[in-house]
Length: 80
Image (cartoon, rainbow, N blue to C red; front, side, top):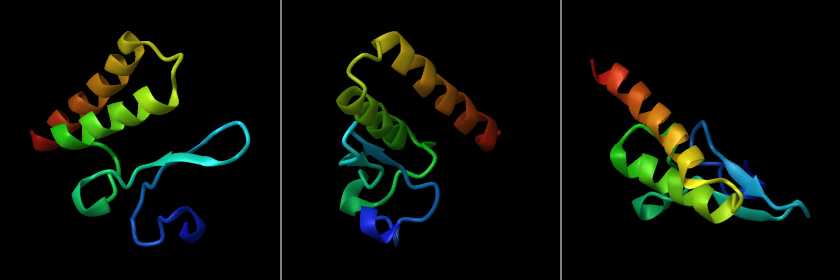
């Protein structure tokens, strides 16, 4: 966790690597460098979607929407 800048981030903490094993993104994307964690708020889900756009160029908008939709569904269930 420390080597990926996630020692104080909490869990889950995500690191995305390229094929050479170099870090290309992590989940410390919220204001102040805070961790997204498991995306639940609209802002967290939006940032997670941006990570997917940036790091998974072959993923379609439809595929990303399915993932984001699942997080929205889970967040809604937690609120109710």
